[in-house]
Length: 159
Image (cartoon, rainbow, N blue to C red; front, side, top):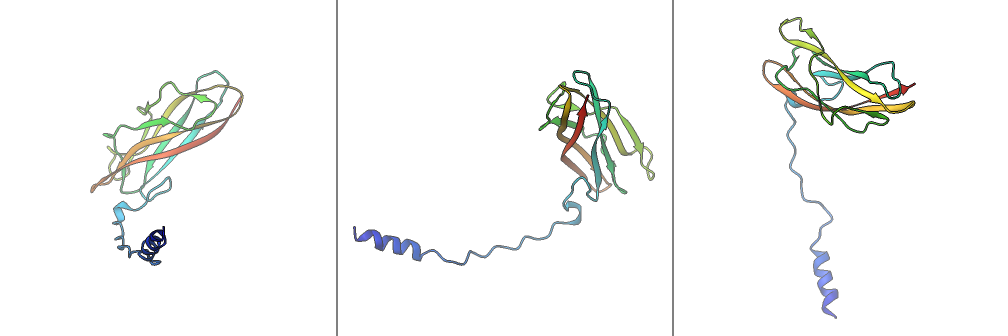
């Protein structure tokens, strides 16, 4: 039993109070800087399309707007994955966002600088509800494309 205190002394004496030095993380290039709903490359929003009545199909709209120098990538399939919603149902677990309204870019009219795509939902009962999920999309500039997944949430009142 006398060896246990000696063993503990050896184990604890090998520990140091100072952590090992951490290598400095190089700064990310400007093209990879943090992005978000109000990032430098785009804005994204979930907007209501009222009225909302219990048991009746209704909708909302997702808008993605590219900032100057970027456009919405038409080759990347936009998707909305309902997640965290309360009091509403969706037809599918993964909604493909197609159609909608496209706003052409001023610099290049064949590119869309903004898109607004409708999503269908059905409120389950009267009262407050939440439309929520993650939208996946891509915006590009001539050098590269960004693939984004942004959580969105919208509080609605159901009649």
